[in-house]
Length: 125
Image (cartoon, rainbow, N blue to C red):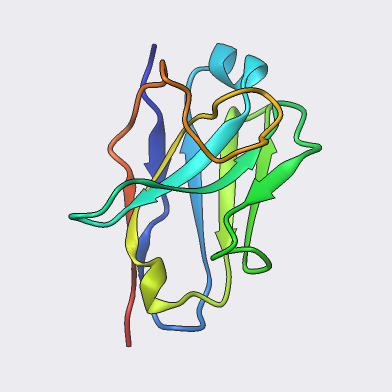
């Protein structure tokens, strides 16, 4: 299974916005819900968002609800995470991966997913 490729991270001031992107093989996008996850050194990976393969259902962690929005362009094999009103506690490496199940009922990764390198998002004044 090919790894995911994340991009678009960077340094942003609190209250700012950033959009990160994720691409992988078409056959992965066509058949799977895709989640965004983040990890801070020394802490467990946290589920941030999920979008179903049709794009009609999304789910978000309570910590980002109303600030982050995920979308997908299946024609470009790309999933996006638009992050608004960023806070210092959003600082982490952000990864995308195949989500567990296809209904985005929870924010857990599939046991069989591969992981990319992630993209660093830093929120600081």
